[in-house]
Image 1 (spheres, rainbow, N blue to C red):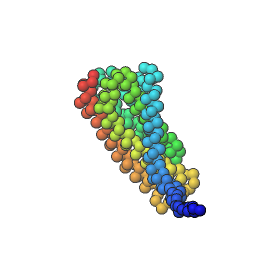
Image 2 (tube, helix red, strand yellow; image 1 turned 180 degrees about the horizontal axis):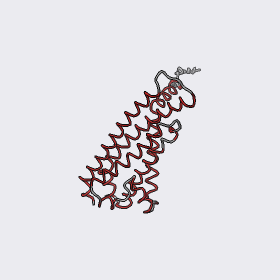
Image 3 (cartoon, helix red, strand yellow; image 1 turned 180 degrees about the vertical axis):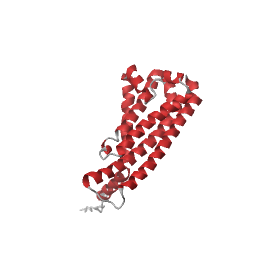
Image 4 (cartoon, rainbow, N blue to C red; image 1 turned 90 degrees about the vertical axis):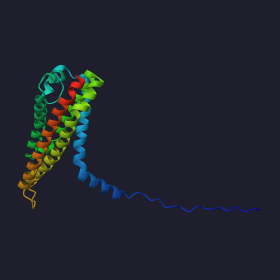
Amino acid sequence: MRGFVFRLKPIRKRNFPDITKRISRFRDVSHRYGAVIFFTCVFALGTLAGSISAGRADSTLLSRLDFLFTTNLSERLTQPFLSAFSASFASNFLFLAFVFLCALAPWGCAFIFLAPAFKGFGTGLSAGYLFITYGFKGICFYLLVMLGGTFLFCFALIIECLQSHFLSCKIAGYVFRGALSDTPVTVYVRRFLIRSLYALIISALAAIIDMLLWIAFSGLFF
């Protein structure tokens, strides 16, 4: 009779991921970059909503929003080039002013997200309007002429939203919870004012870039 020999493979220990460490890392990342991710996602969702709404927007709505976004290109082209700077800087200033005022109120942190949401909506609306009205030429015009200044200002806006959210939460802690800290709230306010000035300078640079690109390349398309 022949015997059968069974060889059993040794059971390998599976290295299960340390869930506790992953949760801890996720908390650290969310604590450091959660606000940045939130405001960026809000802006992206606003851009998506604006691009979808461009096809259903009528001329009345577009003309009313032209002072904030470029939704009436034929009228903009008939104006002097300096008006491109004025319109861009005025629009940027309104968004920064809203975020600035929210920072000085204890309940402002609940409304700061409206600025990147509405700016994203206008960005998507402008891009969608140019694509629907002028086709591929409108998209090239947006990418070459308008995207540079828009991207620079959106970067400054998100940074301003982060600073505003931080200061508003600090003020809310002092007002509603009586939270005490070694650093007086006036120090945070002074720091916020300085950084807000930087954001205003960046928005002015974005408006200058808009004007220069408008002068250099708008004649190539229209």
